Length: 92
Image 1 (cartoon, rainbow, N blue to C red):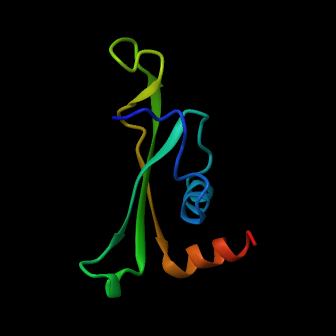
Image 2: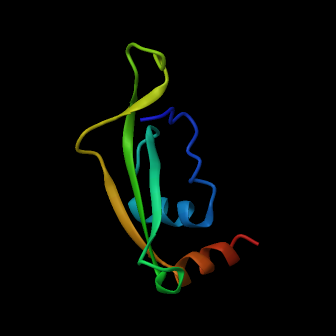
C-alpha cells in the first residue's frame, strides 16, 4: 500500500458522505478505493467506497509513514449518484 498520511478522498463529496456513513472512524482510518459499479458510464448509479485503518511502517522505504493496512478493519459503503449530488450541493 502507498503512503496514506493524507486521505485524498476525504475532501471530495463522495468521501465526506462515505466517512459519515462509516462513523465512528479512528484518526488512522483512510478511504483507499472508490469506483462506480457497472460496465458503462450509463450504468453508473452506485459508487462503492472502501476504507480501513492503517498503521505506520516499522521498516523499509516508508518507515514511520502511515502505510500498512490493518487486517480486519476494512469497511465498505455504497453511495448513489443522487446522494453524492446532494452532499455536493450542500457544501456550496
